[in-house]
Image (cartoon, rainbow, N blue to C red; front, side, top):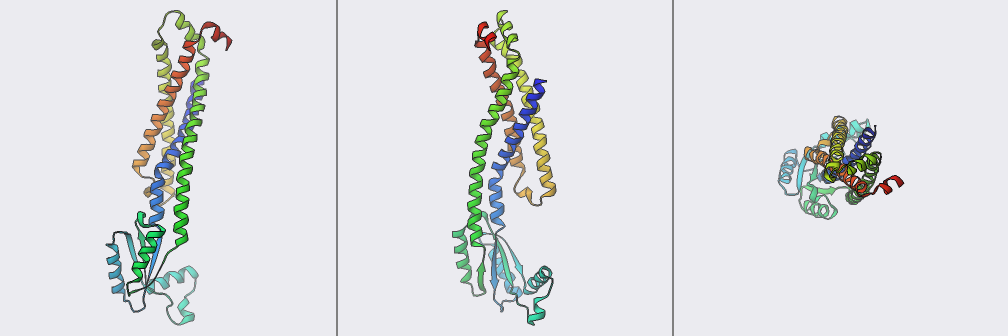
Amino acid sequence: MQAVTLCISTTMVLILLGLVVLSALTTRNLTNYVREHLTVTVMLGDSVTAKEGMALGNELKSAYYVKDVTYISKEQALKEQTEAMGSDPSEFLGVNPFVATLEMHLKADYANSDSLRMIADALKQNRQVTDVTYHENLAEQMNHNLNRISMILLALAVLLIIVSYSLISNSVRLDIYSRRFSIHTMKLVGASWSFIRWPFLQRAFNIGFVASVFACAALGGIVYSLYQYQPGIEEVIAWPEIAIMAIAVFAFGFLITLFCTLISVNKFLRMTAGEIYKI
């Protein structure tokens, strides 16, 4: 029964640890994903034809800082706004009020305030471009929030490792405490310390393995659910991060149970008969 309790508590701790490890690993991917989905809108002049606008878009695609560019004609912009508002603005104004635009997404390294400002100034030098707009405050706030999230995750990981060590250590200690007289009896009949330790370490290894399998299965179910119900999540949670998370769960599951068991067994091995009966 104690082994089952220890296995369950270890599994719960490993699930939490796995989530923190996965979150920490995917922070950079999430940062890149958010930055690369920041839209820079390049407004084109009324005299720019569709052919010229698409040619400019193709030219921008070859720029080192651009991830992708989409050309949106005046007619397409009108259609999208009509669907969004439920009415056609050109019906009251008599003309199409929208201009052709290029919607541009930058590479993650250039989606910051300084780079955006320099890129916008360079684009405005083109005679075909009337204006360049982007959410400058959003870019600054996004970078600030992502840096804050990274620090929080780091602190949470350290705190969780300390807490998980304490929880698993206490569970292992209670399990070995209940068998302290067996340890002392084996000492009295002349068994070596390594011989006494081996069954406990083997049991701890088995518990760590089972708990790690259950934890990875639960984490795999969580990731699978995200893949099913959250479009685009594969850009944030990729297979390398999932593999590293699984390795971390197994490594921690084995190391923490074996380490705690070794310390607890050695503690009772050092005790005299009087000390064992007093505790």
